[in-house]
Structure formats: C-alpha cells, structure tokens
Image 1 (cartoon, rainbow, N blue to C red):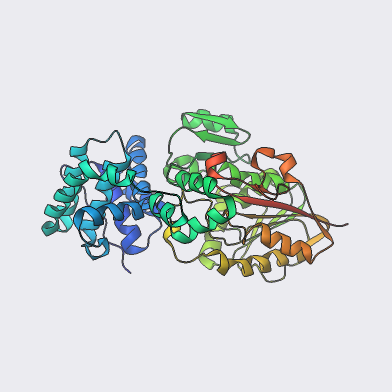
Image 2: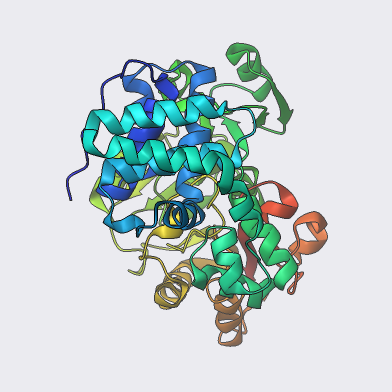
Length: 446
C-alpha cells in the first residue's frame, strides 16, 4: 500500500502536531514503522529538540493507545472507526489522545488544530471532527475511567494491547505484573546513547553533546528525547542509540581482544559494533545477516563506527559457520514484545507471533552452538517477554545437549533476574525502566 503523502505545514497548526498527524497516517495507512516515519517527518520540518519531544509524545502515544482511542471515538461518534475517512480518523485519534491522556495541552488547541488537519485532507469531515472532539473534551476521560482491567480482555482495551499479548502476560507474569507491564508500554522509553569507545568516551561525548544526562559505564542516560540520527556525532560514528538492557548483552558475552566472535542475525548492528568496541578492535567479529539490504546497512554501520574487525556475511543464520568461535551471540528474530514503548507500532503488527518464531529460534541457537569451540561461551538473547521464545527455547536446547551448562546470571545481576528462572535475566520495563530483554549465557564443556 502506498503511504499518504507528507502534509505541508498548515496555517494554525504547530509543526509538532503536523508531524504527529503525518506519522499516524503513515503507520496506519501505509504500514510505516513509527520511528522511521517520525525521523523523516521531523527532519523534513526541521523540528528543534522541544518540538521533537512533543511530536514524539503525540505520535507514539496515539499509536500506542489506538485501541482505547478507537473505543472512545466509536462511543462518541456513533460510528465504527474503520468506516471513517482515513484523514478524519487520524485527526480524531490525535485529538482524543491529547484530550484524554495529556494534562498540559489546552483543549482548544487539541480540538482546533485537529480540525484544521482534517480540513486540509478531508474538508467534509472537519465538522464531524469538531463535534466529536468537543464531546471528547467533556466525556472522554470519564469513559476511560470506567474501563476495567481485571481480565486479559478488559486489560487489552484499557491498556491498548492486542488480546493475545494481554493473555500471554497474564499467564506468564500474573495479573498484577501484566497490568503494570502494559501500562509501562504506554510511557516514553528510556533515551540512552552508547558512546563508541573506539572513538570517544562517555564523558567526552557528554561534554560534546551538551545534553542533560548521567554517565553509566559507556552509556549516557538522557533526561529527554534526542534525535541521534540527525546529529553530526552519528555520522562521525561517536554514538549509538541503545538501551541499557541491549548493552548488557554484549557485556555478558564478554568478548576479549584477539578472540574470534560470531554474531548471528546481527543487523542493525548495535550489538555487533559494541562487541568490536569491547574487544578494542582486536580479533574478529563475523556478523551474519540474511537480508541483503540489512547486511549492506550493517556494513556501512560498522565502517562508520570504525569497527574494522567486523566481517559481514550475507547468509542464513541457520547455515553452518566457517570454523569455530570463542564466543557466539545468538540474537534471533523475535516478537519484540520487550520494546513496545520504543516501537509503538510493533504491538499491532500481525507478523512475529511467538508460536511462529520458536522453531526458527531453536534452529539458530543450534547453529550457534555448532560453531562454538569446546570451552567457549554462548549468549542467547531476545528483546521480548515470552516464555515460548525465551526460557523454553533454552531449556529444550539444554535437555538435548549435556555438554552445555548454564551460568547463574541472576547472581551477577540480581536486580534483573528472571521472575521464575533466576539463573537467566529478564528485564521488565515496568520494573527496570529499560527494554524487556531475555538473556541466558551457556558454556560448552572443554
């Protein structure tokens, strides 16, 4: 499907709202990824840091909460949202989100600018937008306050998640944690930059960027969103946006200078280039990526970051590797359920269900194990919260491979230990304020 064209600035509409409206349309009409659409629209309208923060809040928040917003729209408009003109629906979703979930946005601005956005693309629908949003300014919050979250079905609507995710987490974590996790998915993800230690340090990067942040190892934990991809420091290879949980993967693999390391399913390259930095660019990192376009992008990322020890191989991760490796990172495709705050559209995509991925994950783990030398170390990691893709994959592997043992990572990082299998790690956004990652570390007998 073709994406709707990006709107030009509209009189009476601030740039942040124009960008958010464009992102919402591109996600739900064109199937775009929200982060990429936001980056493109923000660059086109040259948003400053303050406007980018608002545009991010408006667009991500609307995409995240669309199920709840559509419930309100249907109640107030008396129509099924899917039958409304697409520009009208986008303007309504954006307006209702502001009126319902934001406290510092004046109602007249949320209503008036949403009407102007609809008027430009669907003039005959502007009156409906005006009428519904005026009702929403009075009635939307009480409607939402009446929603319950006592069952997976109710929680899915109240916290705007597909029912299958709500059911999965009720079963895996229990109702209290499931509700807290879904609520956390609707907040802003942590903003973190990894300083590329092949070129700089975290302290030097902080001084250069002049942002509000604290230093933690080689990371900057920022107080506000930062458009890393538009910064000259990105082009210069000085930084990489990466969550604290994602950075823990490379640190726990603990590659040493001079070793030979295999990274399976390596794109987009955040972990790959982190491995090279941890190795001080001494040794070899073989980065495997099946998709030709992503493999090319990974090659360019490694070059930009100065990670000259990275060799990108464009092939299937299930194929046998050439030779043996001291350490192997298995980071297979997963359902991405640990990154729903930073990837707001991921929850609505039909691809990536856990049951469709576990078989492939097991195959890639087996391929990684086959490439590991005796006495070597393997880390299995995903960015999801799903037993069928995480602990069950590792348990099934260990049951058939007595020459492998599992390390007790829960002792190393007790704050992040898995809630039911404490030898593994499972970060939880509502508990740990970072992406939801599963990490297991295995060792092959000498």
